[in-house]
Amino acid sequence: MSSETVAETLPRHADLVEERLVRWYFLAAISYMLISMLGGILMALQLIHWNPLTSWEIFSAGRWRMVHTNAIAYGFLANAFLGTLHWVVPRLTLQKVASVKLSYFIFAAWQLIVLGTAAGIIIGPTLQDQEWIASLARNWHMEMSLGAQGLEWGETPFWVDPIALLGLALVAINFLTPIAKAKGPMYVTLWYYMAAFVWTFLTYAMGNFLPQYALTGTSAGAVGGLFIHDLVGLFVTPLGWGLMYYIVPIILQKPIWSHGLSLVGFWGLAFFYPLQGIHHFLYTPIPMFLQYGAIISTIAVEFVVATVVINFMGTLWGDGRKVVTNLPIRWFYTGMIFYFITCFQCALQVTLTFQKLIHFTDWVVGHAHLVMFGVFSMWIFGTMTFLFPRLLGREWYSRKLCEIHFWCSAVGVFIMFLDLGLAGVFQGFYWSSLQPWDVSVDGSQPFWITRLFAGLTMFVGFLCFLYNLHMTYRGEQRASSTAAVPATA
Image (cartoon, rainbow, N blue to C red; front, side, top):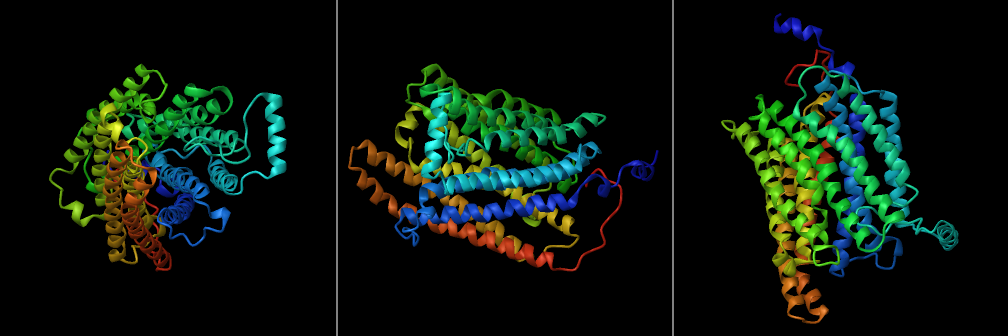
């Protein structure tokens, strides 16, 4: 059978992918990124006493720190990944999602969940609400709050959690259905996606229900540590790597270097990552065998990541010039190098010797920003750079603005990473020398000022991206393709 005959038997792209929904998810993600970056700038101004809104309690740093992190995790990353899932899964399986109507419902419901979380964090409970909740909690022997829960990355109000969990279940059903219908060998991207649907549901349930209703003390701390780390490793990481494995070979027009090595990376992630979370709570009353296990598994993940990096470098071999000429590839490979750096850094910082110096310092903050923005956000921006011309039927308005966005993002986040890493070392030595707390705060000011301008650099790049996208929307539209889905699309 000729390739033309095979192409004629394949379903059309327009019959598989709901492009309008992909655009909506991307635009929602971009909106939350804007909110998150504004919140980050507000907190950076607060630290160096430049915040002009100190008299407004609703803009307090305590509230907006939680908005900053939740808008990234559940607003930007979740929406962007849901958008890419609606593009990737139908094209890989040649099957539509279980229900397009369900997809639109999930989109609307998820925005309400994210906005409800933000409202619960910013507004918080009134005095009457607090009295009612306290009475209900006494009757049920539980601790509940209308506002944020006291758990990092799990500050969603208790009334949002069941709705969010239901939404995650619906997402899994909507995408696992076409995967189950797919015929032939299963590509590694779908391995990562299937795992992410299961892991994310279990991770969210574990982190938001067990410490809230069932566990206390060190047990709640151990589960909280697992949650805040597994949210990155079992929700964001499999969706991010799955996306890389899909788009990079398409752009390079060649298969992934080693499918076997890609499965080594997948199973290594599945085995080692769930054990790491307790490394957030070293030198605590949590049993030492659990702390040692978290240290060993964290170091092991660096070797797992090395296999993935080798695989993608092997795929790029012979086409290195495309890192210069192809913007999406540059986004992806820069993020991949940052990922290797963060994992190598993590393997060092989880040792008990290193923890004595950097525990609770800005070193950890720099590490978190490099992995969340320098890796996953950059992969998403690379995906948007690649897909928006296809979604809009027109080329980017300005290649120069795309370049500015990349360089401001990459340079800004790397400067922030280095700056906060140095700040953490200085803070650690201040504290270990038993100097007054104020000395460490004063000594951190130059680093915090540098962090502010690094963040502003990233924000300028993002504004260029927004303007470029706006002008691209206004451009003339090409005729949309109705061809069958080719293997390289």
